[in-house]
Length: 107
Image 1 (cartoon, helix red, strand yellow):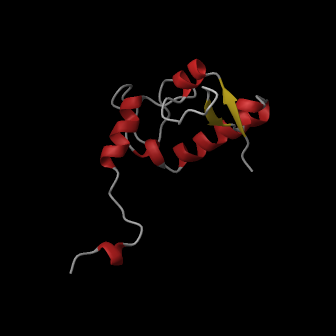
Image 2: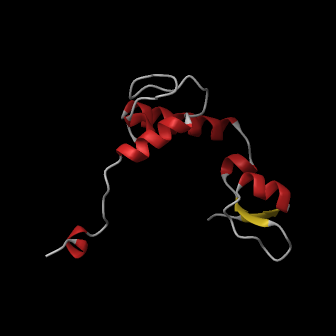
């Protein structure tokens, strides 16, 4: 179950400019474990998720980073972050898939 909380408009706009505003002038931002309770457990979970993606070359770890030139399957030189150019390269290289290929296929 995900809780939500209202943050001031200036803070919310900087953090999530795409979320709709509420009547009070703030924006509703979904709360997560790391934003509500910063703890070593949430840090460990975050690190484990990134390590799993890196190890099996999932997501952005499936392409090499054009910024720091690390090969696919390696972490960027940034700690706890991925370069934006690597994310963009992943989205460009990602094959287009459809949810229901038989329904959208042409005759």
